Amino acid sequence: MTEVKVKKGESIDKALRRLKRKLDREGTLREARLRKAFEKPCNRRRRKAKEARLKLYSSLY
Image (cartoon, one colour):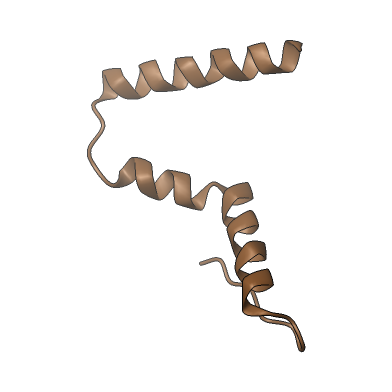
């Protein structure tokens, strides 16, 4: 489980921002959203292929 310790003198907003950034990097929230409902294998393959295409195109430019 991901955790962020609030440093002395640090605001809660700043700690929340650090937590959100950390979760985003790890992909925890995204994975939780994907696992919320069952995804058929054919739809999973289609989604992964689309993500791979987008990743390839974004790396070209």
